[in-house]
Amino acid sequence: MAKLGLAFQRMRQAMVFWNPRSRHSHGESHRAEGLFLRETVFGANDGLVSNVSLVAGVAGATADPNTVLLAGVAGLVAGAISMSLGAYISTKSERELRESEERRERWEVAHMPREERAEVRQIFREKGISGPTLEAVVDQVTSDQDQWVQTMMRDELGFSEQPPRPTAAAMVMGIAFSLGALFPVAPYLFLEKNAALILAVGLTAAALFGVGAWRAYLTSGNVWRKAFEMVGLAAVAVVAANLIGRLVGVGIY
Image 1 (cartoon, rainbow, N blue to C red):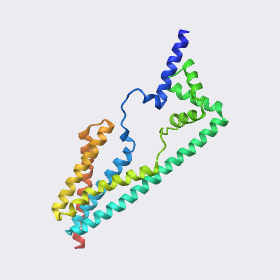
Image 2: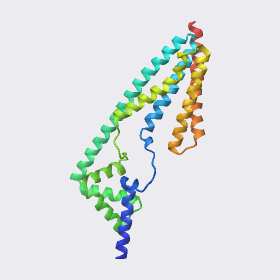
Image 3: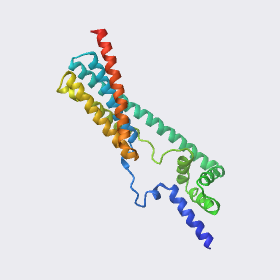
């Protein structure tokens, strides 16, 4: 009886390991703001870097602030639309792939249960579970078809718990890009020439530093290293764009 009790105790521990609801039910603090981290960081970073590079390039080619402002606004609008559409299509494709794989798994569970049980057994054996506990876990997982399929989707195919959301991803990407792209443009609304460019670069650097620090906070990384990483990469793009703009400007004017 003691051995049987120990086996069931180990089984419950194993179920806590693979069950996402159990993992989050004992007071751990998880950062929900990381749900759209990829879209937010990618959109904001691209908006900041691409538009400050565009502004710096045009400012290097012409001293007319209205031309620079027009280019910056055009870059903001075009970039936001492009990034939103790209996020929607890529995320929708990912969702469609997930749905296709889920249909396949459901068919296999219904028509090839023996082979699928063997795969479940192998999955949990690789997690370090063996003996009576392993069989108990396999029986528990395969007792419910939805639970069985989701286990295969997660542990065999590597899909996340939640399916991707194309509309939400597109909105987050577009908003993040627009907010990022606004920083390099805003100074040209009330300043001119070098003063506007200096402030645009300064605001962009500060925003990139903030995005890098937030990213470090979410990933428990080094704040200064990640922040300066983003600022440094953007600085290279700005300098290159401005130099190219100056060369083109000399050739045109």
